Amino acid sequence: MTERDSDPLFWTPDLRVETRPDGVMLVSTGTPLADYPRSMNVRLMEWAEAAPDRVWLAERDGEDGWRRVTYAEAARAVRGIGAALVERGLSPERPLLILSGNSVAHALMAMGAQHVGVPSAAIAPAYALAEDLGKLRSVVEQLTPGMVFAEEAAPFLRAVDAELPGIPMVTVRGDAPGRERIAFDALAATEPTDAMEQAHAATGPDTVAKFLFTSGTTGRPKAVIQTQKMICANQQTIRQCWPFLREPPVVIDWAPWNHTASGNKVFYMVLNNGGTYHIDDGRPTPRDIGKTVRNLREVAPTWYFNVPIGYQMLLDTMEADAELRHTFFSRLKMLFYAGAGMSQPIWDRLTKMAEDEVEGGVLLATGLGSTETAPFALICTTRQERSGNVGIPADGVTLKLVPAGDRWEARLAGPGITPGYWRDPELTAEAFDEEGFYKLGDALSFHSEGRPEDGFHFAGRLAENFKLATGTWVAVGELRAKLCNELGGLASDAVIAGEGREALGALVVPDWSKVRGAAEDTSAEGAALLTDPGVKAAVAARLAAHAKAATGSASRVTRVMLLAEPLSFEAGEVTDKGSVNQRAVLRNRQDLVDALWSDDDPRVIRAEDAA
Image 1: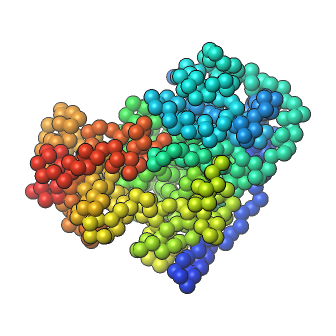
Image 2: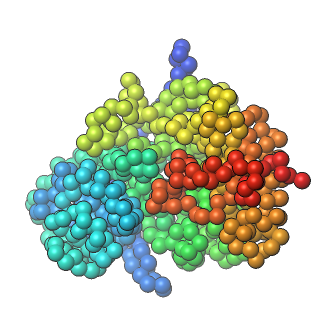
Image 3: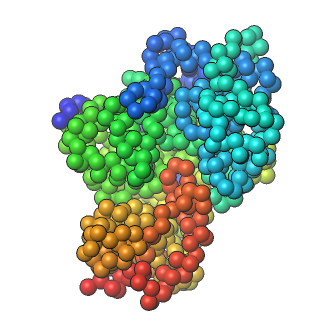
């Protein structure tokens, strides 16, 4: 067991609450943010001078090694790339579009562009790899890019030829026939120029650093403006909430940079604090989790992020591998999760393992934010017995709570909030209320009624909630988490159905290993396993207990179907951060939703079927 101070240095907030006559509440710490730089590139140059030989970025170099880039090497490449982009006339009107996933070259291209006031825009690689290029077309129409980057040319040539004719393409590997192709190494080796220095000097808090796109699962992807002020203020907020970052963090992370959780919070958190970022080439999928395990044998993080399904997969391995556990927890100060609610069985397994490995345990926590909030807004830094507490507003953030039935609509204000959506004043106006608060679209409930200092729980997306035939509102997000907990680990996630009906049902994403453990025929596969008598009996028993404990029809799921086919990213059912899009699943699988209310479909498991 590792011995250390059981509570790393977290903030001690002094919460202030104002309740207005109309019931609206304003919640904040009242603690101002300390000074922060005008841009994150300033911070890169500071670290290049203060710790030139420290590794900033590392990526796998074959099976046995890492390719590492120091702060000094990165600063030199960033200045060279910036000089080349200025020379080619890139600007906010003609930004840099990044098609491929996380890599050292990706990071240097983005920072090179931002160094001279040219926004970068990393998009989900699937947009350019999908058969239907509609989302990529929408991105290109909104941004009018002046240059495109892809680590490797070949996978993206079809999309680039179709949607970006005549645009120069920068690649690390591969040619781009029929267009100008620029070698990344040559671009990075460009000599810095006076024009580059002038462009860098002209950047400031209001400079657009990047565009991040919302997932686009309910419409076209929206280009959310990310200014330097947003990012830098957000990073100062993180520093004040997590003072342990004064020790340069060591991070290993797979999450995509085209999403705000990693592309903003984690990426810039490492840079802002002079840390080292190892790019994990694994993913929380059965095919790729082995790569993450291999990487964690070699890199002991001080701070770690994953989505709940990723933690579940790591637990399955770590519980049988003492050496991996010891390495992982050897200097870990915090475990963070996001992207989806964490079921209580996973929470319990993870906290127990942390307590077994580290005296006093390790804080396991989550928060709440969005692409429009850069994203750090609410954060929990107190030990919890159960999962789901998203915490309180961080320093610099004001949370506005608007009564919405027995819950509260969340709105946010602060220097980390976006000024709006690129070239879309109408959508921008709709996103803010009359006082300038950003309308998050999420509902919250109190952890302890009337005690905001104890934190809040996510109570669903307002757009996902629906009414039963009785007119009773269903808080979908809250119920999904509750159902997964009460199915006792048999479910990884759930999608709630029943709008306009008298009772609720759910399509359940199974935890295949736990489901197999309940089967009578453990050799069964796929749909046959999901309709195995032992599996159906185990699910029915847990569903019956859930239904009996429910307080009303809006919190009681009476029938479920286990999904044999995995959720699809391409169909918009899963976002790039790994969370489930409730409405997309219901829309795409309407036949299964209809079948839920069939009394003779063998796939349907009812609470009343319990022995």
